[in-house]
Amino acid sequence: MESALEPFTIRNPEPIKKEDHILILAPHPDDEAIGCAGVIQQAVKVGADLRIVYLTNGDHNQIAFIVYEKRITLRKNEFIHMGEVRRKEAIKAMELLGVDENKLTFLGYPDFGTFAIFSRHWKNTKPYRSLLTRISAVPYKENFSPAAPYKGESILNDLKKVILEYKPTKIFVSHPADVNVDHKTFYLFLEIALADLKNEIPAPEVFLYLIHCIGWPLPRRYHPELGLLPPEKFMRGDIKWLALVLSSEELEKKYKAILCYRSQTQSSAFYLLSFARRNELFGDYPEIETRGHLGTIAGKEGRVTYDLIDGHLLICIEKNQELDKRFAIMAYLFGYSKNKAFAEMPKIRIITRHNRIKIFDGRKIIKPEGISLTLEPKVFVLRVPLKVLGEPDFILGSMKSYGGSLPVEAVSLRKIIIRR
Image 1 (cartoon, rainbow, N blue to C red):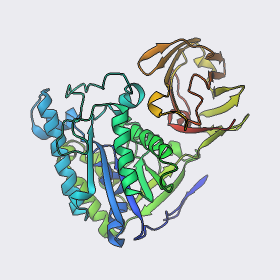
Image 2: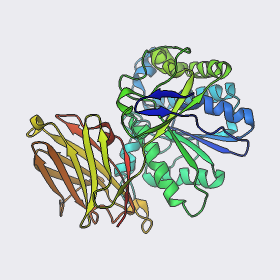
Image 3: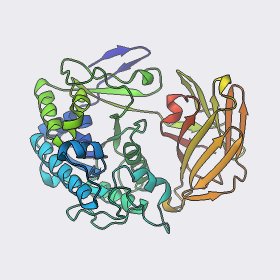
Image 4: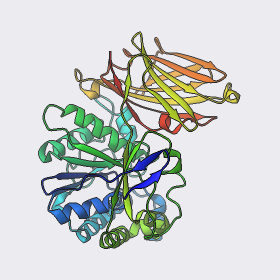
């Protein structure tokens, strides 16, 4: 499938080969069917080895629970029951696509809680406590690490074990621009895991699939006659998109696999079946390198520039002049260093309100030493010493604005390579 979409073209990925080891990383049971059912079928068809890993059991969807069970409950065991329901649905859906249950790995970490774990729960902090299940460890006995505490080390170690044992050649994971926090988080954990394993396994190809994006895809409901195009706001960015074309048989099986998730489709079939179209999409942002004044991103709504000057990371955002007094952001900056375990690296969250700054490292407020903010009518500049970020080799960063919109490339998680 080649479709000219100015100013870029969607291209086909390289065909999956029998020698490939395919690893699908799904934040919740159903994401693998929605985003990668075609990949899964084509891997099965050529005889490639395949594994699917689920970050959560998807036990936090209260609306789907109420519609599916036709009752309201907030009891812990009922949410765990829903996680078991979704695990069984995944087994049934993947069996339909030709994947044996022994190829599926369920980690069972808290649905809607994994980003909090990544950003705040490492080392000596208490494990994350799920808001709904009110537990702090994996509750499912059949899962990969039953009773593992809800901490960053638990998820990272599980993922590294899977990758190290399986040695995938191609990995499919949720997109960093996805608005669902668990989807962002699986991408984050994968980046850290691959960096830790850099010298132990050959580098796999990584393909990112997008599920949650406001107002996309349109039209809603099942339209097998249509192709799946990127969201409009990504059409002028620097994501390079790939389209995997599905045969009519593959598309029909994808449709049926999505319907296996009855706990979800009873309330959201109109949305989930919107992804059963003639192709699947995969696209990644290029890495940003900071060397003087490199790293400029041209976006539809403005421009973001990442600079490295005098041992400081500078983030410069063009903005609307009218937002001068109302402009506020929350920035996440996660540094990685090959010289220090990621659990020991700072997990920085910066909140600005006009010209005031509040800094967190994980759950602790820290002094904004060396961190400065410049807010002018048309530009916002945040200056952060690399020392505060743990002298990283690269940074995984994103921002969220209040009182005004940011370019989509700033809101999405980006990998920023530090070249000193």
